[in-house]
Image (tube, rainbow, N blue to C red; front, side, top):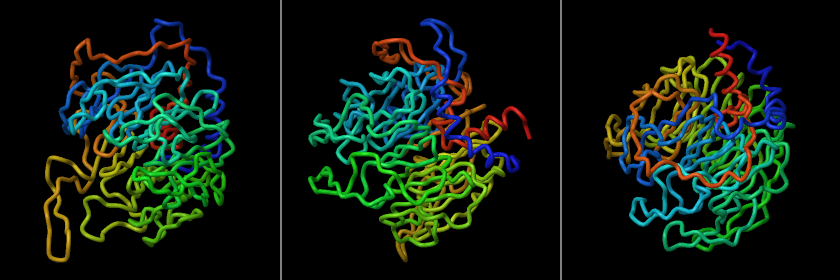
Length: 474
C-alpha cells in the first residue's frame, strides 16, 4: 500500500521532527482563531473521570471531552488522560493521586470515594510550548519545542528523571514521592520523541539514540542500574533517576514504553525489545525475561510503527498489524511469544496498545478495537485445566461505533481516546461551571508545526504514513 517509501522517510524522522520543534513560526496572537478543529473523544472506564465528560458514567459509546478544541495530540495513562492543543498548552483529567494531572485537584471524585481526581480537563501549569505528550501509569511527560523533556506525577521509582521531596497520597493514606508541577529532565537535549510506560520513561533523540530512566526491575531500561529506589512498600528496587543510553541499538525511528518492557523501531524497519517477557512480549519465541540488553523481535521487517502495553503491536508498511505478548482474552497459556498477524485488519495507519485492549486506526478514519470489553460479553477463557468462564471481550477487531474521520488514537488501562473533528460522534454537553480550569498562561505559547502532532500518536512513522495516505490516496 505504501511501498518502500516509509522506510526511506523513517531515516529522516528524528531530525525532521527536531527541526519542526526548533524552527516553528510564532503563535497567533491571543484570541486569534486556531486552524485546528479536532477534539477528543473517550470511551470505557470512567471511575476516576478519565473520560473527561464531567460524569462518572462509563460506556462503550465515545463521548466528547468537555471544553477542548484545537487538539493536536492525545495520550492515555492508567487512569488519566492528556491532550495537547495547537497553542502548545497541555490539558489533563482523571485520577490525580500521584500528581499526574500537573495541577491541584480538590475534588474527591474517584472510585473508591476519596480518591483525588478531576472529571473535566485542567491545564497543566508551567508548560507553555509543548510539542508532544505521553501518559504513564501515574506520571506524565511533555516534550518542549526546544527539544527538552518535562515530567510530573509519581516519582518514587525514578520515572520523572529526578528525586523529589514532595509527598502525594497514592492511594489515599499512603504517601509516595511526586511532583505536581512539571520538572525538567536533566541530561537530555535535542529530543524528538517521548514515551511513558508503567513506571519508566523513554526518549528518542534526533541522532537516533534511545534513553531510558525510572523503574528497572525487569530490565525495561535496557541497561544495568546500581541505584536503588524505595517502592510503595519501602523495599529497595532497581531504578535510575537519570536518563541512561540504551546500548545495542542502531539508529531508531520510533519508541514505545509498555508496562514493564520497551520497544524500538529501527530506521531499517526492524523491531527491537527489552525488559519483561513473562507473557512473550519481547517476541523472541520464549517467555524468559531479559534483565539487560536488547533483542530483535523475530520475523518482523518493513515495519513503520510500534506500540506497547501489556503486550506489543507493530504496524507494517502494507497496512497490516502484528501482535505478540499478553493476550487478555486468550485461553490459558495462549499468550503469543512470536508475532502473529491480526486478522480482519488492513489499510491501518496507526496502532495503540493498552493494558487490556488494543486499537487500530484505518486510513478511512475509522477506529477498530479488540480485547477486554466490559460490560458486554463474548469470550470463554480457560482458567485452569477443568474450569472455564465467560468474560466480556471482543476477540477480533470491530469498528468503534460513533467515530468518523479520526486522526489519532490512544489506549489506557480501561479507557480509550480518539482525536476526531467536532461532530464525529454523540456530543455530551458539559455545564458551563465544569468547563476546563485554565491556569495563567504566563506568556505567549509557541506555534506547533503541523508535523509535530505525529509525536503524540502510536508511532512517529505511522503518523507520517497517515499524512501520506490522506494526501496521495492509494
